[in-house]
Image (cartoon, rainbow, N blue to C red):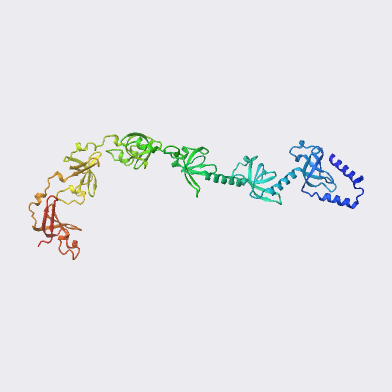
Length: 541
Protein backbone atom coordinates (compact mmCIF):
# COMPACT_ATOMS: atom_id res chain seq x y z
CA UNK A 1 0.00 0.00 0.00
CA UNK A 2 1.12 3.53 -0.83
CA UNK A 3 0.49 4.88 2.70
CA UNK A 4 2.44 1.98 4.20
CA UNK A 5 5.40 2.61 1.90
CA UNK A 6 5.44 6.31 2.73
CA UNK A 7 5.33 5.55 6.43
CA UNK A 8 8.23 3.09 6.16
CA UNK A 9 10.28 5.67 4.23
CA UNK A 10 9.57 8.35 6.81
CA UNK A 11 10.49 6.01 9.69
CA UNK A 12 13.80 4.95 8.01
CA UNK A 13 14.78 8.54 7.35
CA UNK A 14 14.09 9.47 10.93
CA UNK A 15 16.23 6.60 12.21
CA UNK A 16 19.33 7.12 10.06
CA UNK A 17 19.61 10.88 9.43
CA UNK A 18 21.30 12.98 12.14
CA UNK A 19 18.95 14.87 14.39
CA UNK A 20 20.57 18.16 15.22
CA UNK A 21 18.34 18.89 18.19
CA UNK A 22 19.32 15.60 19.83
CA UNK A 23 22.96 15.39 18.68
CA UNK A 24 24.35 16.40 22.01
CA UNK A 25 21.99 14.12 24.01
CA UNK A 26 23.38 10.85 25.32
CA UNK A 27 22.09 7.70 23.63
CA UNK A 28 20.66 6.41 26.91
CA UNK A 29 18.44 9.51 27.34
CA UNK A 30 17.09 9.18 23.80
CA UNK A 31 16.26 5.50 24.42
CA UNK A 32 14.50 6.41 27.63
CA UNK A 33 12.48 9.12 25.89
CA UNK A 34 11.61 6.73 23.06
CA UNK A 35 10.48 4.07 25.50
CA UNK A 36 8.33 6.52 27.43
CA UNK A 37 6.65 7.61 24.16
CA UNK A 38 5.65 4.04 23.41
CA UNK A 39 4.36 3.42 26.91
CA UNK A 40 2.11 6.44 26.74
CA UNK A 41 -0.16 4.67 24.20
CA UNK A 42 -1.83 1.51 25.48
CA UNK A 43 -4.11 -0.60 23.40
CA UNK A 44 -7.73 0.51 23.90
CA UNK A 45 -6.74 4.08 24.75
CA UNK A 46 -8.46 7.04 23.07
CA UNK A 47 -5.94 9.51 21.60
CA UNK A 48 -6.06 12.66 19.53
CA UNK A 49 -4.46 12.82 16.13
CA UNK A 50 -4.24 14.80 12.91
CA UNK A 51 -5.00 13.49 9.46
CA UNK A 52 -1.75 13.70 7.48
CA UNK A 53 -2.78 11.94 4.28
CA UNK A 54 -5.76 10.32 2.61
CA UNK A 55 -5.65 7.63 -0.04
CA UNK A 56 -8.64 5.65 -1.24
CA UNK A 57 -10.46 4.26 1.74
CA UNK A 58 -7.64 4.80 4.21
CA UNK A 59 -6.12 7.72 6.05
CA UNK A 60 -2.91 8.18 8.01
CA UNK A 61 -3.38 9.85 11.38
CA UNK A 62 -0.46 11.36 13.29
CA UNK A 63 -1.06 10.50 16.95
CA UNK A 64 2.45 11.47 18.15
CA UNK A 65 3.59 7.88 18.03
CA UNK A 66 6.70 6.56 16.27
CA UNK A 67 4.45 5.75 13.34
CA UNK A 68 1.15 7.09 12.09
CA UNK A 69 -2.06 5.22 12.72
CA UNK A 70 -4.01 3.64 9.87
CA UNK A 71 -7.72 4.49 9.86
CA UNK A 72 -10.32 2.78 7.67
CA UNK A 73 -12.56 5.55 6.30
CA UNK A 74 -15.56 3.18 6.19
CA UNK A 75 -15.82 3.75 9.95
CA UNK A 76 -16.78 7.40 9.35
CA UNK A 77 -20.44 8.39 8.86
CA UNK A 78 -19.38 10.55 5.88
CA UNK A 79 -15.91 9.62 4.59
CA UNK A 80 -15.97 12.43 2.02
CA UNK A 81 -16.21 15.06 4.76
CA UNK A 82 -12.75 14.39 6.22
CA UNK A 83 -9.67 16.19 4.87
CA UNK A 84 -5.95 16.49 5.56
CA UNK A 85 -5.26 18.57 8.66
CA UNK A 86 -8.47 17.61 10.47
CA UNK A 87 -8.08 16.72 14.12
CA UNK A 88 -9.78 13.51 15.12
CA UNK A 89 -10.09 11.23 18.17
CA UNK A 90 -9.34 7.59 17.56
CA UNK A 91 -8.84 4.47 19.59
CA UNK A 92 -5.32 3.03 19.70
CA UNK A 93 -6.38 -0.46 18.65
CA UNK A 94 -3.27 -2.62 18.06
CA UNK A 95 0.07 -2.97 16.21
CA UNK A 96 -0.13 -4.68 12.90
CA UNK A 97 3.19 -6.39 13.74
CA UNK A 98 6.34 -5.55 15.63
CA UNK A 99 7.69 -3.15 13.03
CA UNK A 100 4.43 -2.51 11.27
CA UNK A 101 1.82 0.22 11.40
CA UNK A 102 -0.55 1.10 14.23
CA UNK A 103 -4.21 0.39 13.61
CA UNK A 104 -6.63 3.00 14.98
CA UNK A 105 -10.43 3.05 15.01
CA UNK A 106 -12.84 5.96 14.98
CA UNK A 107 -15.88 3.74 15.52
CA UNK A 108 -14.36 2.04 18.55
CA UNK A 109 -13.26 5.38 19.93
CA UNK A 110 -16.79 6.65 19.71
CA UNK A 111 -18.05 3.45 21.29
CA UNK A 112 -15.51 3.64 24.10
CA UNK A 113 -16.29 7.28 24.71
CA UNK A 114 -19.99 6.43 24.85
CA UNK A 115 -19.29 3.51 27.17
CA UNK A 116 -17.29 5.76 29.49
CA UNK A 117 -20.09 8.31 29.43
CA UNK A 118 -22.71 5.66 30.18
CA UNK A 119 -20.69 4.33 33.11
CA UNK A 120 -20.23 7.85 34.50
CA UNK A 121 -23.78 9.13 33.99
CA UNK A 122 -26.01 6.08 34.30
CA UNK A 123 -26.47 2.91 36.28
CA UNK A 124 -28.81 -0.05 36.38
CA UNK A 125 -32.31 1.39 36.59
CA UNK A 126 -31.49 4.54 34.62
CA UNK A 127 -33.65 5.62 31.67
CA UNK A 128 -31.95 6.18 28.28
CA UNK A 129 -33.24 6.99 24.82
CA UNK A 130 -32.32 5.01 21.74
CA UNK A 131 -33.38 3.56 18.43
CA UNK A 132 -34.05 -0.12 17.74
CA UNK A 133 -31.64 -0.68 14.87
CA UNK A 134 -31.75 -4.40 14.05
CA UNK A 135 -33.14 -7.80 14.91
CA UNK A 136 -30.84 -10.39 16.44
CA UNK A 137 -31.52 -13.86 17.84
CA UNK A 138 -33.63 -13.44 20.99
CA UNK A 139 -34.32 -9.76 20.57
CA UNK A 140 -32.98 -6.48 19.20
CA UNK A 141 -29.91 -4.27 19.23
CA UNK A 142 -30.63 -0.71 20.30
CA UNK A 143 -28.41 2.27 19.45
CA UNK A 144 -28.00 4.39 22.58
CA UNK A 145 -24.65 5.79 21.40
CA UNK A 146 -23.43 2.24 21.50
CA UNK A 147 -25.29 -0.97 20.86
CA UNK A 148 -27.27 -2.48 23.75
CA UNK A 149 -29.34 -5.64 23.81
CA UNK A 150 -33.11 -5.58 24.15
CA UNK A 151 -34.70 -9.04 24.77
CA UNK A 152 -37.84 -9.66 22.72
CA UNK A 153 -39.79 -10.40 25.93
CA UNK A 154 -39.07 -6.87 27.18
CA UNK A 155 -39.98 -4.90 24.07
CA UNK A 156 -43.61 -4.23 25.05
CA UNK A 157 -46.10 -4.50 27.90
CA UNK A 158 -47.78 -7.51 26.34
CA UNK A 159 -46.29 -10.37 24.31
CA UNK A 160 -46.52 -9.77 20.57
CA UNK A 161 -45.92 -11.98 17.57
CA UNK A 162 -45.13 -9.23 15.08
CA UNK A 163 -41.69 -8.14 16.26
CA UNK A 164 -40.84 -6.48 12.95
CA UNK A 165 -43.13 -3.58 13.84
CA UNK A 166 -40.55 -2.39 16.38
CA UNK A 167 -37.64 -2.07 13.91
CA UNK A 168 -36.52 1.57 13.69
CA UNK A 169 -38.61 2.56 16.73
CA UNK A 170 -37.21 5.48 18.73
CA UNK A 171 -38.15 5.09 22.37
CA UNK A 172 -36.96 5.27 25.93
CA UNK A 173 -35.61 2.23 27.74
CA UNK A 174 -34.69 1.21 31.26
CA UNK A 175 -31.20 -0.18 31.85
CA UNK A 176 -31.73 -3.50 33.62
CA UNK A 177 -28.14 -4.80 33.56
CA UNK A 178 -24.62 -3.49 32.92
CA UNK A 179 -21.67 -5.88 32.48
CA UNK A 180 -18.48 -3.71 32.58
CA UNK A 181 -16.16 -6.60 31.73
CA UNK A 182 -17.99 -7.49 28.56
CA UNK A 183 -19.11 -3.93 27.89
CA UNK A 184 -22.61 -5.30 27.63
CA UNK A 185 -25.87 -3.51 28.43
CA UNK A 186 -29.33 -5.09 28.63
CA UNK A 187 -32.37 -2.83 28.18
CA UNK A 188 -36.10 -3.11 28.83
CA UNK A 189 -38.73 -1.06 27.06
CA UNK A 190 -41.43 -2.92 28.99
CA UNK A 191 -40.09 -1.68 32.34
CA UNK A 192 -40.00 1.89 31.05
CA UNK A 193 -43.58 1.66 29.77
CA UNK A 194 -44.71 0.33 33.14
CA UNK A 195 -42.97 3.22 34.90
CA UNK A 196 -44.59 5.64 32.48
CA UNK A 197 -47.96 3.99 33.01
CA UNK A 198 -47.59 4.21 36.80
CA UNK A 199 -46.68 7.90 36.57
CA UNK A 200 -49.65 8.61 34.30
CA UNK A 201 -51.91 6.62 36.60
CA UNK A 202 -50.73 8.48 39.70
CA UNK A 203 -51.20 11.81 37.93
CA UNK A 204 -54.64 10.85 36.66
CA UNK A 205 -55.74 9.51 40.04
CA UNK A 206 -54.73 12.80 41.58
CA UNK A 207 -56.95 14.67 39.14
CA UNK A 208 -60.04 12.43 39.41
CA UNK A 209 -63.03 13.25 41.57
CA UNK A 210 -66.63 12.13 41.71
CA UNK A 211 -68.84 14.03 39.31
CA UNK A 212 -66.00 14.88 36.94
CA UNK A 213 -66.64 14.40 33.21
CA UNK A 214 -63.67 12.78 31.44
CA UNK A 215 -62.81 11.28 28.07
CA UNK A 216 -61.58 7.73 27.65
CA UNK A 217 -61.10 4.97 25.13
CA UNK A 218 -63.01 1.67 25.14
CA UNK A 219 -60.43 -0.95 26.13
CA UNK A 220 -62.50 -4.09 26.69
CA UNK A 221 -66.16 -5.15 26.49
CA UNK A 222 -67.75 -7.80 28.73
CA UNK A 223 -71.30 -8.97 29.37
CA UNK A 224 -71.54 -6.82 32.51
CA UNK A 225 -69.92 -3.63 31.24
CA UNK A 226 -67.07 -1.81 29.52
CA UNK A 227 -63.53 -1.07 30.71
CA UNK A 228 -62.43 2.44 29.79
CA UNK A 229 -58.80 3.58 29.55
CA UNK A 230 -58.55 7.05 31.09
CA UNK A 231 -54.98 7.89 30.02
CA UNK A 232 -53.36 5.01 31.88
CA UNK A 233 -56.12 4.46 34.44
CA UNK A 234 -58.89 1.91 33.90
CA UNK A 235 -62.47 2.53 34.98
CA UNK A 236 -65.56 0.33 34.75
CA UNK A 237 -68.66 1.50 32.93
CA UNK A 238 -71.32 -0.95 34.14
CA UNK A 239 -74.08 -1.93 31.72
CA UNK A 240 -76.69 -0.41 34.05
CA UNK A 241 -74.94 2.96 33.81
CA UNK A 242 -74.68 3.04 30.02
CA UNK A 243 -78.22 4.10 29.18
CA UNK A 244 -81.45 5.08 30.89
CA UNK A 245 -83.08 2.67 28.46
CA UNK A 246 -82.92 -1.13 28.36
CA UNK A 247 -79.90 -2.71 26.61
CA UNK A 248 -79.06 -6.40 26.37
CA UNK A 249 -75.29 -6.07 25.83
CA UNK A 250 -72.77 -3.18 26.03
CA UNK A 251 -71.72 -3.81 22.41
CA UNK A 252 -75.07 -2.33 21.35
CA UNK A 253 -73.71 1.14 22.25
CA UNK A 254 -69.90 1.01 21.96
CA UNK A 255 -67.07 -0.89 20.30
CA UNK A 256 -63.41 -1.37 21.21
CA UNK A 257 -61.35 1.70 20.34
CA UNK A 258 -64.23 4.16 20.62
CA UNK A 259 -63.42 7.42 22.37
CA UNK A 260 -66.32 8.34 24.65
CA UNK A 261 -67.20 10.85 27.33
CA UNK A 262 -68.15 9.51 30.77
CA UNK A 263 -68.80 10.75 34.28
CA UNK A 264 -66.93 9.54 37.37
CA UNK A 265 -69.76 8.20 39.54
CA UNK A 266 -67.59 6.72 42.30
CA UNK A 267 -63.87 6.74 43.13
CA UNK A 268 -62.28 4.72 45.94
CA UNK A 269 -58.76 6.09 46.49
CA UNK A 270 -57.74 3.14 48.67
CA UNK A 271 -58.68 0.40 46.19
CA UNK A 272 -58.25 2.76 43.21
CA UNK A 273 -61.53 1.51 41.77
CA UNK A 274 -63.24 3.89 39.41
CA UNK A 275 -66.91 3.59 38.50
CA UNK A 276 -68.08 5.44 35.41
CA UNK A 277 -71.44 6.40 33.97
CA UNK A 278 -72.61 7.38 30.52
CA UNK A 279 -76.32 7.82 31.16
CA UNK A 280 -75.56 10.36 33.89
CA UNK A 281 -74.57 12.86 31.18
CA UNK A 282 -78.24 13.02 30.13
CA UNK A 283 -81.21 14.04 32.28
CA UNK A 284 -82.91 11.23 34.16
CA UNK A 285 -86.21 10.61 32.31
CA UNK A 286 -87.87 9.74 35.64
CA UNK A 287 -87.40 13.34 36.78
CA UNK A 288 -90.70 14.38 35.20
CA UNK A 289 -92.34 10.94 34.97
CA UNK A 290 -95.26 11.78 37.25
CA UNK A 291 -96.01 14.87 35.16
CA UNK A 292 -95.67 13.17 31.77
CA UNK A 293 -97.60 10.05 32.80
CA UNK A 294 -100.27 11.00 35.36
CA UNK A 295 -102.57 8.36 36.85
CA UNK A 296 -105.57 7.40 34.66
CA UNK A 297 -103.88 8.70 31.51
CA UNK A 298 -103.64 6.47 28.44
CA UNK A 299 -100.24 5.61 26.99
CA UNK A 300 -98.78 3.64 24.11
CA UNK A 301 -95.64 1.56 24.42
CA UNK A 302 -93.70 -1.50 23.33
CA UNK A 303 -93.55 -4.81 25.20
CA UNK A 304 -89.86 -5.32 26.08
CA UNK A 305 -90.00 -8.18 28.58
CA UNK A 306 -92.39 -10.94 29.60
CA UNK A 307 -92.24 -12.56 33.04
CA UNK A 308 -94.65 -14.92 34.84
CA UNK A 309 -96.05 -12.05 36.91
CA UNK A 310 -96.47 -9.49 34.13
CA UNK A 311 -95.28 -7.63 31.05
CA UNK A 312 -92.87 -4.65 30.99
CA UNK A 313 -93.85 -1.95 28.53
CA UNK A 314 -91.35 0.71 27.40
CA UNK A 315 -92.97 4.15 27.37
CA UNK A 316 -89.74 5.90 26.32
CA UNK A 317 -86.01 5.22 26.60
CA UNK A 318 -85.38 4.72 30.30
CA UNK A 319 -88.99 4.47 31.45
CA UNK A 320 -90.87 1.19 31.65
CA UNK A 321 -94.18 0.31 33.23
CA UNK A 322 -95.46 -3.05 34.46
CA UNK A 323 -98.75 -4.57 33.39
CA UNK A 324 -99.39 -7.14 36.12
CA UNK A 325 -100.92 -10.39 34.89
CA UNK A 326 -104.02 -9.58 36.95
CA UNK A 327 -104.48 -6.33 35.01
CA UNK A 328 -104.78 -8.00 31.61
CA UNK A 329 -108.48 -8.88 31.73
CA UNK A 330 -111.55 -8.39 33.89
CA UNK A 331 -113.04 -11.72 32.95
CA UNK A 332 -110.17 -14.13 32.24
CA UNK A 333 -107.43 -15.41 34.49
CA UNK A 334 -104.06 -15.77 32.72
CA UNK A 335 -101.13 -17.80 34.06
CA UNK A 336 -98.57 -15.93 31.91
CA UNK A 337 -98.77 -12.64 29.97
CA UNK A 338 -97.43 -14.40 26.88
CA UNK A 339 -100.93 -15.87 26.50
CA UNK A 340 -102.09 -12.47 25.20
CA UNK A 341 -98.91 -10.41 24.57
CA UNK A 342 -95.65 -10.85 22.63
CA UNK A 343 -92.22 -9.16 22.70
CA UNK A 344 -92.04 -6.07 20.53
CA UNK A 345 -95.82 -5.69 20.39
CA UNK A 346 -97.17 -2.14 20.47
CA UNK A 347 -99.86 -1.88 23.15
CA UNK A 348 -102.12 0.71 24.71
CA UNK A 349 -102.59 0.82 28.48
CA UNK A 350 -103.87 2.96 31.32
CA UNK A 351 -101.53 4.41 33.96
CA UNK A 352 -102.72 3.10 37.33
CA UNK A 353 -100.06 4.68 39.55
CA UNK A 354 -96.63 6.35 39.39
CA UNK A 355 -93.92 6.04 42.06
CA UNK A 356 -91.18 8.34 40.84
CA UNK A 357 -88.87 7.65 43.79
CA UNK A 358 -89.06 3.87 43.35
CA UNK A 359 -89.03 4.29 39.55
CA UNK A 360 -92.18 2.23 39.13
CA UNK A 361 -95.25 2.73 36.95
CA UNK A 362 -98.22 0.38 37.24
CA UNK A 363 -100.18 -0.11 34.03
CA UNK A 364 -103.41 -1.84 33.19
CA UNK A 365 -104.84 -3.09 29.91
CA UNK A 366 -108.21 -4.28 31.17
CA UNK A 367 -108.95 -0.71 32.27
CA UNK A 368 -109.31 0.24 28.60
CA UNK A 369 -112.71 -1.50 28.82
CA UNK A 370 -115.47 -0.84 31.31
CA UNK A 371 -115.12 -2.67 34.62
CA UNK A 372 -117.96 -5.01 35.67
CA UNK A 373 -117.70 -3.26 39.05
CA UNK A 374 -118.58 0.16 37.60
CA UNK A 375 -122.39 -0.16 37.98
CA UNK A 376 -122.56 -3.22 40.19
CA UNK A 377 -124.80 -1.41 42.72
CA UNK A 378 -127.40 -0.82 40.02
CA UNK A 379 -127.26 -4.23 38.41
CA UNK A 380 -127.10 -6.18 41.66
CA UNK A 381 -128.74 -4.15 44.43
CA UNK A 382 -128.49 -5.31 48.03
CA UNK A 383 -131.25 -7.80 48.78
CA UNK A 384 -131.46 -9.18 45.24
CA UNK A 385 -130.99 -12.89 44.63
CA UNK A 386 -128.29 -14.13 42.25
CA UNK A 387 -127.29 -17.50 40.88
CA UNK A 388 -123.62 -18.32 40.39
CA UNK A 389 -121.02 -21.05 40.23
CA UNK A 390 -118.74 -21.98 43.13
CA UNK A 391 -115.21 -21.14 41.90
CA UNK A 392 -113.24 -21.90 45.04
CA UNK A 393 -113.55 -23.00 48.67
CA UNK A 394 -111.69 -21.63 51.66
CA UNK A 395 -111.93 -22.48 55.37
CA UNK A 396 -113.98 -19.35 55.99
CA UNK A 397 -116.33 -19.56 52.99
CA UNK A 398 -117.08 -20.15 49.31
CA UNK A 399 -116.25 -17.82 46.38
CA UNK A 400 -119.04 -17.59 43.85
CA UNK A 401 -118.73 -16.15 40.32
CA UNK A 402 -121.77 -13.96 39.61
CA UNK A 403 -120.59 -13.08 36.09
CA UNK A 404 -117.16 -13.03 34.37
CA UNK A 405 -114.96 -10.69 36.38
CA UNK A 406 -117.48 -10.31 39.19
CA UNK A 407 -117.76 -12.54 42.26
CA UNK A 408 -118.80 -12.65 45.88
CA UNK A 409 -118.16 -14.57 49.11
CA UNK A 410 -120.59 -16.72 51.09
CA UNK A 411 -119.16 -16.80 54.62
CA UNK A 412 -119.65 -20.02 56.60
CA UNK A 413 -121.73 -18.05 59.11
CA UNK A 414 -124.19 -17.22 56.31
CA UNK A 415 -124.73 -20.79 55.12
CA UNK A 416 -127.23 -22.05 57.76
CA UNK A 417 -129.47 -20.56 60.44
CA UNK A 418 -129.41 -23.59 62.62
CA UNK A 419 -126.26 -25.62 61.92
CA UNK A 420 -122.81 -24.70 63.09
CA UNK A 421 -120.63 -24.91 59.90
CA UNK A 422 -116.97 -25.79 60.37
CA UNK A 423 -116.07 -25.82 56.65
CA UNK A 424 -118.05 -24.81 53.52
CA UNK A 425 -117.52 -28.24 52.02
CA UNK A 426 -120.19 -29.46 54.44
CA UNK A 427 -122.69 -27.65 52.16
CA UNK A 428 -120.94 -26.98 48.84
CA UNK A 429 -118.31 -28.24 46.46
CA UNK A 430 -116.34 -26.54 43.68
CA UNK A 431 -118.39 -26.23 40.48
CA UNK A 432 -121.80 -26.27 42.21
CA UNK A 433 -124.43 -23.80 41.02
CA UNK A 434 -125.81 -21.97 44.02
CA UNK A 435 -128.47 -19.34 44.77
CA UNK A 436 -127.66 -16.60 47.24
CA UNK A 437 -128.83 -13.20 48.39
CA UNK A 438 -126.63 -10.08 48.08
CA UNK A 439 -126.01 -8.85 51.61
CA UNK A 440 -123.51 -6.01 51.00
CA UNK A 441 -121.47 -4.43 48.16
CA UNK A 442 -118.17 -2.52 48.42
CA UNK A 443 -117.41 -1.47 44.83
CA UNK A 444 -114.21 0.34 45.85
CA UNK A 445 -112.76 -2.74 47.55
CA UNK A 446 -114.44 -4.95 44.90
CA UNK A 447 -116.18 -7.11 47.47
CA UNK A 448 -119.68 -8.60 47.52
CA UNK A 449 -121.06 -10.43 50.57
CA UNK A 450 -123.52 -13.23 49.80
CA UNK A 451 -125.78 -15.35 52.00
CA UNK A 452 -127.51 -18.68 51.54
CA UNK A 453 -129.44 -18.83 54.80
CA UNK A 454 -130.96 -15.42 54.07
CA UNK A 455 -133.05 -17.04 51.35
CA UNK A 456 -135.19 -18.45 54.22
CA UNK A 457 -136.76 -16.87 57.26
CA UNK A 458 -134.79 -17.04 60.49
CA UNK A 459 -136.33 -19.90 62.52
CA UNK A 460 -134.71 -18.81 65.77
CA UNK A 461 -137.78 -17.36 67.48
CA UNK A 462 -139.91 -20.30 66.48
CA UNK A 463 -137.32 -22.76 67.76
CA UNK A 464 -136.83 -21.00 71.09
CA UNK A 465 -140.40 -19.93 71.87
CA UNK A 466 -140.89 -22.82 74.34
CA UNK A 467 -137.64 -22.18 76.25
CA UNK A 468 -137.64 -20.04 79.40
CA UNK A 469 -134.84 -18.80 81.61
CA UNK A 470 -134.33 -21.11 84.63
CA UNK A 471 -135.68 -24.14 82.79
CA UNK A 472 -133.77 -27.42 83.36
CA UNK A 473 -133.74 -29.92 80.50
CA UNK A 474 -131.69 -32.65 78.89
CA UNK A 475 -129.19 -31.79 76.18
CA UNK A 476 -126.52 -33.49 74.02
CA UNK A 477 -122.84 -32.44 74.08
CA UNK A 478 -121.89 -31.38 70.52
CA UNK A 479 -118.49 -29.66 70.85
CA UNK A 480 -115.74 -29.02 73.41
CA UNK A 481 -113.80 -25.74 73.25
CA UNK A 482 -111.28 -24.14 75.56
CA UNK A 483 -113.84 -21.72 76.95
CA UNK A 484 -116.70 -24.19 77.46
CA UNK A 485 -119.03 -26.86 76.09
CA UNK A 486 -121.69 -26.55 73.34
CA UNK A 487 -124.88 -28.48 74.08
CA UNK A 488 -127.79 -29.10 71.68
CA UNK A 489 -131.07 -28.62 73.57
CA UNK A 490 -133.34 -29.06 70.52
CA UNK A 491 -132.87 -29.83 66.84
CA UNK A 492 -131.02 -26.85 65.34
CA UNK A 493 -130.69 -25.09 68.72
CA UNK A 494 -127.40 -25.00 70.62
CA UNK A 495 -126.38 -23.28 73.79
CA UNK A 496 -123.02 -22.68 75.45
CA UNK A 497 -122.05 -23.81 78.91
CA UNK A 498 -119.28 -21.41 79.81
CA UNK A 499 -116.30 -22.83 81.73
CA UNK A 500 -117.42 -20.87 84.77
CA UNK A 501 -120.66 -22.88 84.84
CA UNK A 502 -118.91 -26.28 84.98
CA UNK A 503 -118.69 -27.77 88.50
CA UNK A 504 -115.50 -29.44 89.71
CA UNK A 505 -113.50 -27.96 86.78
CA UNK A 506 -110.60 -27.16 89.15
CA UNK A 507 -110.08 -30.83 90.04
CA UNK A 508 -109.07 -31.90 86.53
CA UNK A 509 -109.20 -30.74 82.94
CA UNK A 510 -112.88 -30.08 82.39
CA UNK A 511 -112.71 -31.50 78.85
CA UNK A 512 -111.97 -34.89 80.41
CA UNK A 513 -115.35 -34.67 82.19
CA UNK A 514 -117.36 -34.73 78.96
CA UNK A 515 -117.66 -36.70 75.76
CA UNK A 516 -119.23 -35.50 72.52
CA UNK A 517 -122.63 -37.17 72.06
CA UNK A 518 -123.35 -37.83 75.72
CA UNK A 519 -126.49 -36.40 77.33
CA UNK A 520 -126.32 -33.99 80.24
CA UNK A 521 -128.79 -31.96 82.25
CA UNK A 522 -128.45 -28.24 81.70
CA UNK A 523 -130.14 -25.14 83.03
CA UNK A 524 -131.06 -22.16 80.79
CA UNK A 525 -129.49 -19.04 82.28
CA UNK A 526 -130.60 -16.56 79.61
CA UNK A 527 -131.76 -16.28 76.00
CA UNK A 528 -130.32 -13.52 73.74
CA UNK A 529 -132.59 -13.35 70.68
CA UNK A 530 -130.68 -10.55 68.94
CA UNK A 531 -127.36 -12.37 69.24
CA UNK A 532 -129.01 -15.77 68.69
CA UNK A 533 -127.32 -17.13 71.81
CA UNK A 534 -128.46 -19.25 74.76
CA UNK A 535 -126.38 -19.36 77.92
CA UNK A 536 -126.51 -22.69 79.77
CA UNK A 537 -125.15 -24.12 83.03
CA UNK A 538 -124.30 -27.59 84.30
CA UNK A 539 -125.13 -26.36 87.77
CA UNK A 540 -128.70 -27.57 87.47
CA UNK A 541 -129.47 -27.55 91.21
